[in-house]
Image (tube, rainbow, N blue to C red; front, side):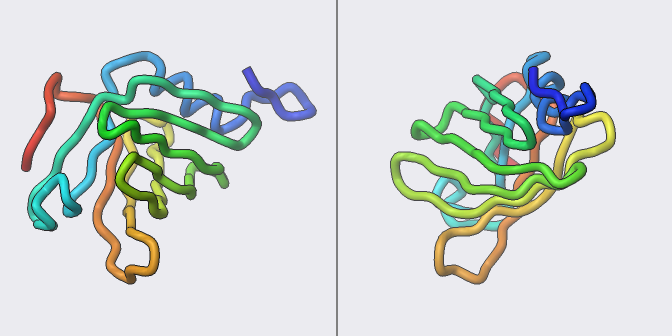
Length: 127
């Protein structure tokens, strides 16, 4: 577990501990998984989580996807990568790290689409 120089647990470690407790999923609106429809969403189980200092990396079960980035307080900014592309992501976590809301985007595209982390509903979800 990563700690600050004064022995405090880092924000990334607190978020990772919550996400590792099980049952969380990462999801988004729009994109190819939703036939480019921003009214539809999908969500996939988070299958692994790593934290190192203020950095967080998590993987979810969609085309080898990985999200990695840094925490600034409860704000997380970084990138997503999968077998068919990559882009940017930003999430704001709740104080207990039980959920997050934010956006994702494709490279060189101004449009931002909603993204989220939540306690899972047990299967791939469509909105």
